[in-house]
Length: 168
Image (tube, rainbow, N blue to C red; front, side, top):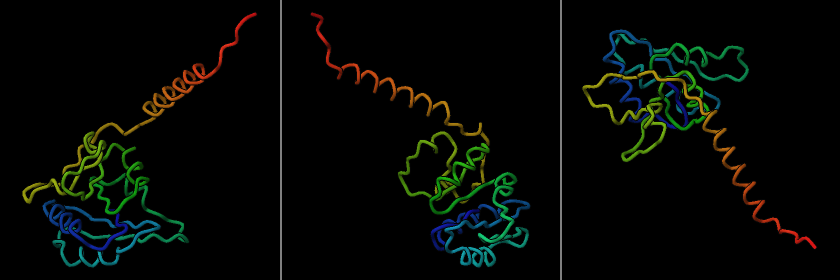
């Protein structure tokens, strides 16, 4: 669970309800350089998680030699991000795991359509966490195709713009 840029809200309530259905779990809060509200999230989860769910929290410290973030991403079954962080999303997508977010109604995102982003708002009271794995997201081919198409378009425009010389 990555906490960033907001105070405890519906996302904590949703995560607490979903994780409480697990037979055994550890909820890990991991802050980042711009994290705000982690203390409130810790207090909320400490008060609202059932006894069989462990709670651990790591606060970002730029002076610390140890940052558990990369290991937590690798070891986690379910990843929840609150706030906005495209860098965190891309790091998780590279593992083939989806990122759970709480998005509003009518939310439309191409990465959600591909299964990389999952909207916690879509979970009902009966649902359990669902984090199906897919191939790690690799946009290298898409970027290369786009760059080639832009280059060809620029070349074509340059040829058209060049005046022709008449032979005498």
